[in-house]
Image (cartoon, rainbow, N blue to C red; front, top):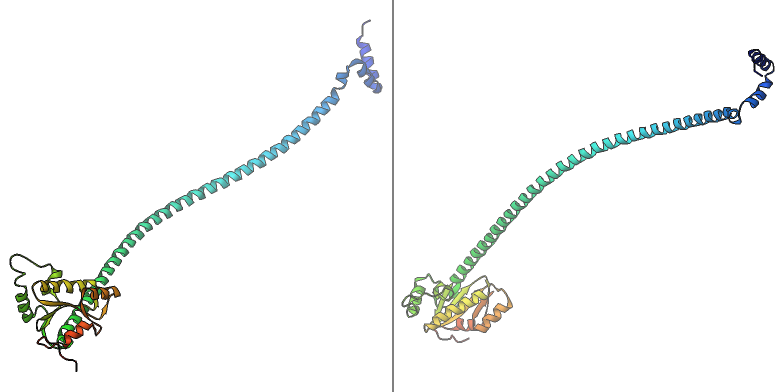
Amino acid sequence: MAFTVKEFHDLVRLLEEHPQWRDELRRLLLTDEVLDLPRVVRELAEAQREAERRLASLTERVEDLTRQVQELTARVDALTVRMEDLTRQVQELTARVDTLTVRMEDLTRQVQELTTGVNTLLGWQRGEAGRREGERYERSIVKRAPMLFSGGVGGPTDDPRVQERLSRWLRGLLEGDRFLPSEEDPTLADLIWWKGDQVVVVEVSVTVDEDDVWRAVRRARTLQSAGVDAVPVVIGDSWDSLETQALAEELGVWWLIHGVPSEAFVAFRRRSPEGTETPVS
């Protein structure tokens, strides 16, 4: 049997009059899934609200993170600028240090050159002072020779009497083209002195060293080779070492050091100007 429009309207009127019948009618007309749909919709709505809440929280966190990233980026940018500025300053400082290093090296070189020059000058001054002191000492010894040797004849090798005597003694050695080495040449001795036939070949030095001893020996030997009774002598204020004194004793060198004579030097002083020994009173 067909369901008329009038019956439908009557049903609607009845449902309006009896609202409690609606649930029963829905239960009869709708499936469980459809009936459960409002709950599902509510759950979906709640889930939507929870998702929106979580999304809002996430958005807030992202925005906060974005802000932190922006702040960090700004700090990194600022640090980069500071690093670039620091790098520039380091480069400038390095350039200044390099320049200063070059200047210091140049200054060091100049100081070294100046030091070398000063040392050279001081060495020259010391040498010159020593040379002048030696010359003064030598002149003093030459002047005092008559007293030191207790008479006799002689003098420095530029004295005409000494030159004449040396020329006579060396005549046989100097024939031809022969030249004596300076260390063997008695004409370069500091002092030549004689009593009778005995001659002393003297080297004078404030501080007597081995070179002085050997020069005296070699120059005396030259005269000895010419038949002269020549003896090497050194006169000074001091020995440079005990070894030099021992060498002089070994080579038979007479000496007068700081006013103290060797025994042979004393014996020469005792000789008379004519060459005979003066008796001791």
